[in-house]
Length: 276
Image (cartoon, rainbow, N blue to C red; front, side, top):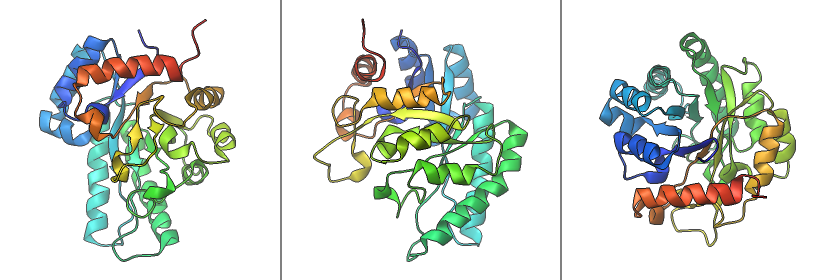
């Protein structure tokens, strides 16, 4: 059985929530990272029951965030939606709610202002998250996505934003795709002790596909040293699930059961310690 391996639902994007849960059970994978949209389609309560009946745990729920809108109705709606996401994470007993913080508003070049609005939004949500027992997990994203998806570009930035809050309420995501390039990543992971809420793995592949969002590869197909990053994360005290989260059109067009079999093998071959 693959130790600590979790399927992030996006890796098998064609499967609705129930099929993804059942697929994990067939493959001997004990944990799943869920996405809100397919959970909504199946129903939150029904998905929670399905997960429990299958003997799985929910490593994360994706996603909250998108808190960079200027003050007004759009921002108010985003905060309200995040409160709903917190409720859903609580009902699913998710390990954390992943926060993809959002990019620049249309027409804006005020990056510092966008980051401040994220900090303000997190501060507004923390009391509610704490009351529901939900951990918010700030996800730094590769600078490629700074304009449209995530104005937090490094693990250091995410840690600075999390610092005012209790680690059990605001943590960080270490996603290999987003952090592997950072020359400070080892030091930043060490600083993350007690704050790592999720560890996600997938590879950085070249040549880059035309759609940057679909540029993630299966472990071993690209350039990332997964064992090194896993060792650093574990040295920082993280011993939770390791999610495989891959956005890739070719994988999405492959039979999901075959994807899970490949994922298990690559996880063993490239993420865990070598067999003796």
